[in-house]
Image 1: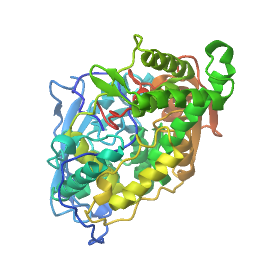
Image 2: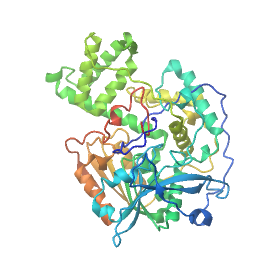
Image 3: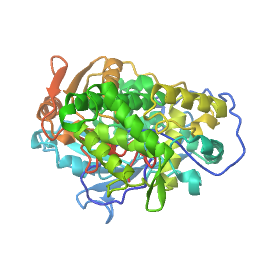
Image 4: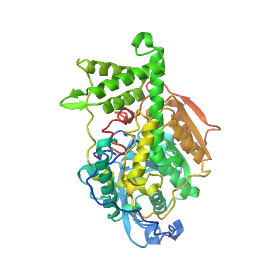
Length: 529
């Protein structure tokens, strides 16, 4: 969903999920065909020794990664149903932090995505974890298959094909359909594209575990990394040690339903904004009831629709107004009020701070594995041109503020690679700590509750009225203490916890919060910028 990040030492940009729309040049429609393969993946013990006992050659990771890290590659089956039929490379990194006599094992880390690299994650995560945890674990990161240094996948997408996300616009829909068909067709013709999935990445994690000679792994995943961690607990429950999932996806809503969850969260944020503003009508004069505040905004948006605002030679249209209003309301009610003031200035022809969002940039290295994961993981996508259009219209009816930003036809509507396995159902009693912000837009509180339901042995730590995406890195003391205690002792809270958001912790943990740009027409989606 975003262009690749430079490999530099940095604080983490925790990233999560958002709307999807793809636009590419026209190619022939590929007709989906039935599942052609039903072979079962090899059981862990059935993998050949050349894979499970392969040597690791740890070296420096290169000038683009911190000197403290060591990197290696392992060979993993392209297809776990046919472990002898070819391999791809998985790049792994480690930071040795454990102390002899205190060492418990390994802590695997994933920063989010899908589509994010993870080799540098042990470095910045290690700077945040307390010494009591570092003494017990060596930290491990990895680039998931198809991404970064792990046999990167390219479907050969160019131009509009490689743009991950754009909103729905009726006048451009035929072009968007052709583009989605092109992405699906090109990936169908690309070796290995059908094997880039969350389930196979979880299997790669277990192969790494076997190669390291570890009996179990502990795990700390954020955003998309929560779904990856949950997949690991489902596939390998006896090998999951201490599992922390921060800012969660609801496994029952993967993938199409994830975007509905985000639209619901945006709608609720706008509702909170209108109520807050109505209570302060004496100050702001936008309406004395939530309905009146909403009408004020709708009237302004209608003005923009009748006469777009020209900014740097481009039209700022009604769709931009809804996008920016949603962004502002999500950031906080004060930001919503500030946006209305700027919009009024612009409509009066006065100096203002509005700007035209730019389109996301083409990035085949991100877009190819991104769509491969989402389409291979899930059968919940609407199929074909009409199915996609019906889905868009339903979303617009349910979420008129943001439906067009979080819904558009995409490659999954035309995905033709055979599905050898049914959608993965997460339902187990593996102990885990599920950490969540109630008002996180990218992974809303309801999705954290869904993860908690799926992992029946888990405890939920909910930051009430928190907006942070990446709770641990946002520093909420209550949530941080729960995570640190669990990783250090293995003791889950006796019951689910409700933490209070503290001042300064109502926003995303990112330097530039994703929540503040999620719904823009240029919204770049998942992954690093």
